Length: 449
Image: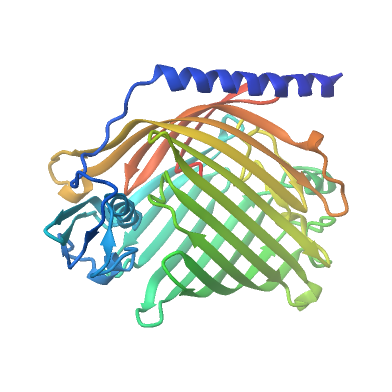
């Protein structure tokens, strides 16, 4: 009976979503857009000179390496618009403008303030008591080479601390990058199985670090290798929680990663593809630990009718090997979640998640600048965008040797507003319904995908 109701509601969900989409297409007016500096978007113009203005801190090559053209190439206005967004995607500038006059391209940038806090908030189970909040202190571009130091402190339900460093161009000649990180967590256990075995809810601590090198193959393709170590300590002997027979896991790990990214504005893309494939091997038989994790994330963004953005995502996380500890299972409800089911935790060896969104720009691009006493001018300038989003999420978790069934998928859909404050962050307010048409509000920072 419940399954029949769920199937009927899935059909109803789709019908409601189609109706909302049709209403949105006809009810919302034209969005604001930024005037273009060139009249014809299809004719090609040769670029004889490229000049960068306004970058007092940022090295020229950091900007030039993002361009898909060089001196001597011919480009269209559409290509210039695309490259302007790529420069914005660096997250270093409050404002970027391209001016093309008599075959000379002038790139004018307004640098951001490079030391600033970014607050974040994760609302869990519609309860402040189970919410995690904190601040990420960024020091960006401190030598003009787009280097980033990030210190994170999270409090509340899942207190954790992290320090990381990333240099995208440690070698300009060989296009090499370098990174390292340290972390300490005191997480509340998310595994229902482990809680049952232990008899009550518990927390466990973990810490570790990594060091990595990357190679930029070209402007869209990157490969990385990371080596690291992790320590996980349970409060007692819990069946299946650790990879060892004891309550402490000490494991080295190796990660190989490939990414393809040709999106325009990475923070809120309108066009392009993004793919990340990651393989991690943990243990290497140290203390008899030996298992693997494979993650795949594919996203596509398409502009529709020169107004709407249609984007979709498929993500998966697969685990296999000798013994996968419960703390390293794949979860929905923690990190990744289905809107409409953010209060429902799911776990298994493997996770599958799909999302579809249609975004309409209520305000496409508006530069806000104001003066405040004692606050640096570069902190009071931001690019604002407001988007109305319609979305559908569907996902499931599954154990190894278990058959995949569509009846085990949870599906949610809804509507939301995303407010961009570039290059800083975004705020999202969403309302989602699940299969049984039970609704929930979602308030968070950052971008859906």
